[in-house]
Length: 161
Image 1: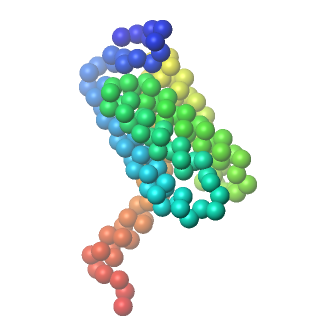
Image 2: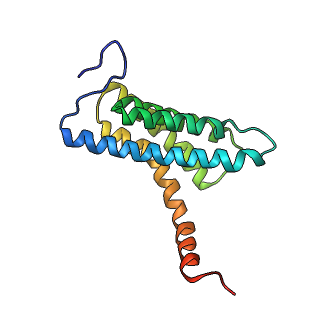
Image 3: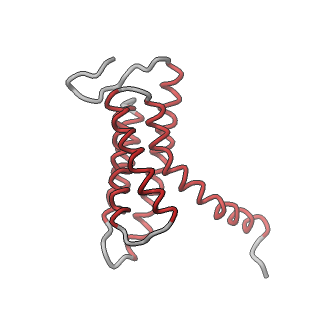
């Protein structure tokens, strides 16, 4: 299908297998973001003195992307995930905390999210747009690996006496 007046409709990709892998990748990213968003909402919100909008909008964007990817609206799922990343990059730029990781998030993830939106709207290189929206999730997952390994070690060997 092509881009018509109704907007971001499901598209037929160049090969059927690339569409299947793209859909699976977007489903995995959206599911991971949904899980992280719901955990953040359940754990951090009751203990905050101030309300942080990020904790409330994250699950909605992630669930929307999950539903869109499940219904094969891959371009729209990329746009929704990229819009959240771009909004988050703007929020990071308003933070007063500085660091290499924060700078990378501000400088890299924001422009990549905008590029993913443009690629999805133009219906070009959707796999690259999916990679761009998966990078923040991959960074978060890689950052969690030491904690996961530590937890597995404690579960296997027990706590130190």
